[in-house]
Length: 221
Length: 151
Image (cartoon, rainbow over all chains, first blue to last red; front, side, top):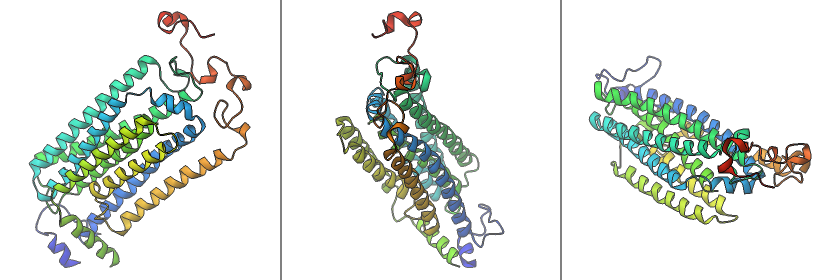
């Protein structure tokens, strides 16, 4: 274990090895494990909404099909492509962080952030359209085009899950922005110090992962 | 000691990139292809198997993201265990309420649903509004757009 901490480059100022870890490897492992534990709680958070979705889709299948066809599939597909591509750039940011190319890290995260903003803008237009025509949750539902029992419940699930997902997009953007600033200012990411980018990127992939499931569930019933 | 070995193994996997950035691009292309598959098959609205197919494709995409973008393939025991347990609980959480609903006394399910014989009006809700859960906009507000209420 001593040799391993030596191999991890003991002379470099970063990352600091906390005294209670045997080596840098163990410290990194612990960081990842902590992140996975957190992501597990996130998965279960979204799972709660997926279960609402499953229960009400089971009860109101026709309403689900009709309501889902009132969404804009083109916008949903564009958003899926945008988010998948932003996941690619987030993964590339980690790749470059490991190689110590801090400029490229900043570029890739900047691309990720641009796509995240694009995603939110498209989402805004979709929301706006729904407020216009009145496909809103519960008693606020006032769209005459689809009058089936259970449709307002579809939009309750739609708004809850996409809003929670949107919140995660914003949080992910903040987390990644911190890494970007560090890559620009301190430029100290390298083979021994990339945990910050890695964990931020993992969070971003989770956001992508949730959308991968939300997209067919909501747009393609 | 076992933990240290696990950490070392993981560190090595993460460090030695047997692959360049190319692998990420490959996964990206696969994800886009699978998205196209979802959209094309989803638009057909396959009656029974549509949902299953959509979920299989989404699960495949999710697995690619998890294994390669999130590096679960390079991670060792503990991380995989945490993830596997979370998925196990998602499945349990999904299965148990659905089994409950599927086996309920019909009167105990929401009126107007496929599992119920009743409509909202049967439990005293408004025939025009409550049945649908929402309120139609009043005529005065947007009369020309919505037209007369249906008879």
